[in-house]
Length: 459
Image (cartoon, rainbow, N blue to C red; front, side, top):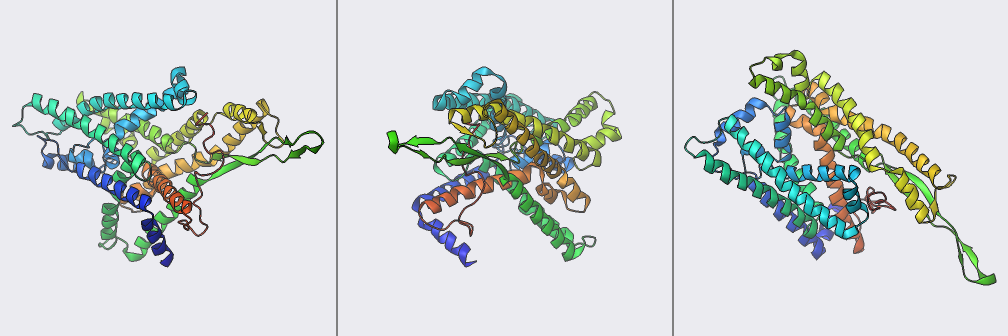
């Protein structure tokens, strides 16, 4: 405890770090405030009834989680930062397939990144207009719009408000990245997710002490399981397979006085979970397709949605849905990792730097070795992502309430752990730079720091 208090004092002593943290907290407070400012012409009571009827088991429940409840509140930040995330994913995928975007990402340096940023912003606006129109249609569908307001005025004013809210949220995230601490966009998503955690914990505690809750022992067991899953998630996120590399020896001096200098040693860190949360997002998007199809046929008067199989697929906590989601995540992990990690680029980079992997010939052999190593490392990472995807369903099966079970795995836990680690690493870098002790006893948070960590992304 004393060490923790001393660390807080050290953080407060550093003026720049103190100002960055306070600035970040202020921006996050503004973002959370905007999550409760309701759009004009919307009836909150109708929204509450619709949210209670849905139960949060569908795509809308997932969006509401990422926006910190702003979606169900019909707030000015109802779409949150999700259109920007969608635009960023599209641009990233285009960078894998379209030569023009590949050139911007890898060869044009800072000017290329500025162009990509501008394209991403414009695409964000376009996506926001489309999603904003769909959201307003949803409000009309659930009868959440006041009948006393003109529909034309409601559409025109609120589509502007929703677009402005998303662009403003994007601007807030960029300000945190520039003047605050941590990655701004990631922090906005995290603060939205973590906003639902206290409610889930309180409800779980209340349920534990109810007549059929299981009592204090079972409650402690659930929290212990949550703690253990979080520890394993941290381990997997930070886990890397280090491939040692060595730079060729050079002759130092001239003539008879020249001596060979020893080549420097470094390593290529291949992350166990190089794909991050993307495979889970892709798998969840596919798993929501049956719900969309059922909704379409329901509007046509069909009873397709009543089919037991469709009901199982629409329920993310069902056995069939969990099994399918597991295999989808494993498959998408391999696909996305193959897109991210390019062994040929690694081999070319090492050749340009006059470096090599001990015991492996440069060129084709190096690329094949990195490819085979990546495939083996990805196996445990993909299995872990598949398991972490279905852990909420397992927790729900063993009696954890739905609001707390979603934090046992899936995108929620991965985003929370990843963002917290990244932010703590930035705080620790400020401490170590000014000769203070780090946040851990060893003085260094292991993870994304390390030699050649950006290889492959900056080439």
